[in-house]
Length: 177
Image 1 (cartoon, rainbow, N blue to C red):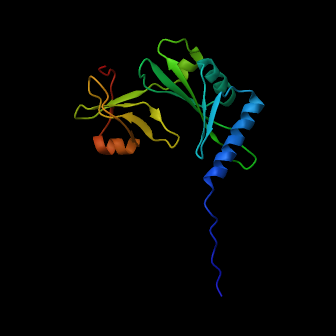
Image 2 (tube, rainbow, N blue to C red):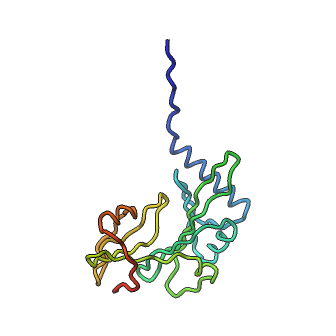
């Protein structure tokens, strides 16, 4: 007679989503943070705000990194990447707090100075790529090959894949609009 280890079943995505929602709701209740719209997912909880000043409250309470997306149609999406405080089991839940910011709108200096700007790279053959931010798994959001007149399509890449496909990346100071 031999014993074989029994592998535990994979986590139920609905249970993980529910657990993430509960963790985020607990933080909201304890800290009194605004969250007009909250969408829980197994990998993170997304909160959408209407006012950039509310993003400052989240930043003050939980810290994190603010990433500013590219401007499209006169607005850009600013996202705070943060997480819940450490729970009793030692885990945290990632929270992504989003707010659209219209170009030229007043934004608190504390937010504007810490926001990561979109980065533009060019390849050795002259093609340009704009890195606008990352998703919750760390993949870079890259509008593909920038034509001087327009963006042709939007695709997802990992930075290593982008470098493998395009060769070395060098920062570009200006992009033709």
